[in-house]
Image (tube, rainbow, N blue to C red; front, side, top):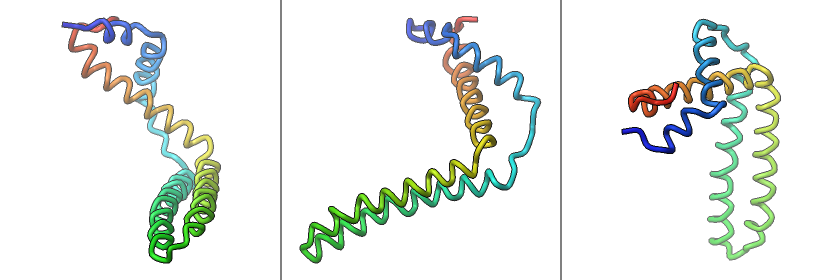
Length: 123
């Protein structure tokens, strides 16, 4: 039995658009440039640097009884992490946007097939 929210979601313009794009993009297999992979790696590095560094700063501040280490170090760590994230996004560039668009369309199509179409979703 299809619920009201599923029927409304299946009928939205952006779901129909994503399904059309997913069908069109199924045949295109253009590989991203190496710059895209470097950008994604740099973005991943931003998370690897950011969160553990904040944890280390918290532990260091607690052991030395110096809260200013955490108060000053955390924004600096987040600043560097954000710079790495922006650098990676810049390197990924248009290939990154194309990949995110493709991924979004694919996820919507998969969600539609699994949860909406099985229930007799809106077409």
